[in-house]
Image (tube, rainbow, N blue to C red; front, top):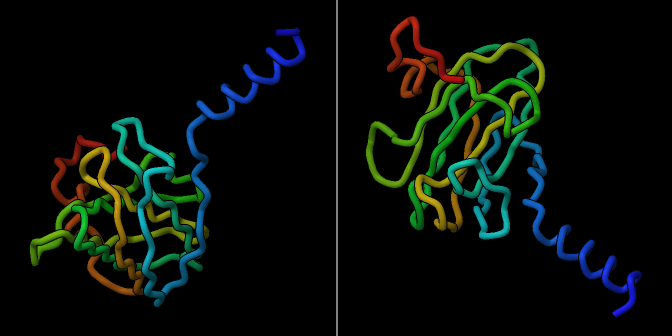
Length: 154
């Protein structure tokens, strides 16, 4: 095999080995969406697949996000900016009502914020329902509410 062909094959193999890029989808406050965590979605360091959503927090305030699925146990994480791989501000993998759902109330500074929906275990996939509403009691249900003052969610 000649060098240009080997280079082309090696380049294709390298591109195929790269992880999927976290493409942020737009989410509006007050919006309800049905989406799917798929096998070819980007993955976190623990191997779980995730979807990335971004919303405009305006000048800031309290927000409530809910995720539910019949096919997997969802985790929801939120943070400032549009990069779903950035350190999280808060997150939750359980709804107070139990079942395959996650519920988080948090305070956001203004500007863009991400909502990351992932699975509890690697290899899980499936359809889910996501909603984002204005209002709520910041800290309810989130990891940050369970931490001591010296702990950090990052």
